[in-house]
Amino acid sequence: MRFHTRHVSVGEFADKYFAVGFDNEDPSDDDFALSGDEAPYLILQRQFEDADGGVCYIETHDHGTYSGHFRLRLIRFTPTSFAFEIARKDHKYVEVTYDLDARRFEEVRRIVNIIFGVHD
Image (cartoon, rainbow, N blue to C red):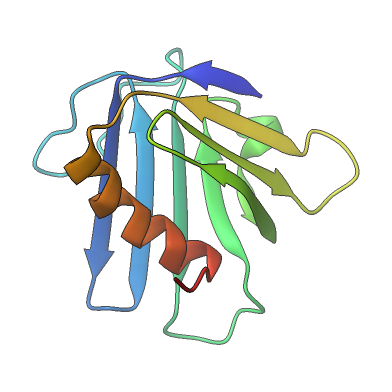
């Protein structure tokens, strides 16, 4: 799956739940109130409250193919693109493009690194 988005949002809840969202609608104060099933979007979440084997929850506009709990591998995160692989046999590549300025990129990068367990 590949798509372009205009907005990237992040969330951190009680230092145990982390999320990043990609959507074409401007995020509200609720951050992850997305535009609807017809517009491309991606939400990626990880929780650290319970032992879960390192899986992440993903949700996309393609509910049947790209939504659920999976092990993920980060491929790329730059100011213009985010790509990861889902640990399964098919439909495993996801890439989102966008444009982030340097300050916003650092804010989002911190959350992406936590979700994927990347240590600087």
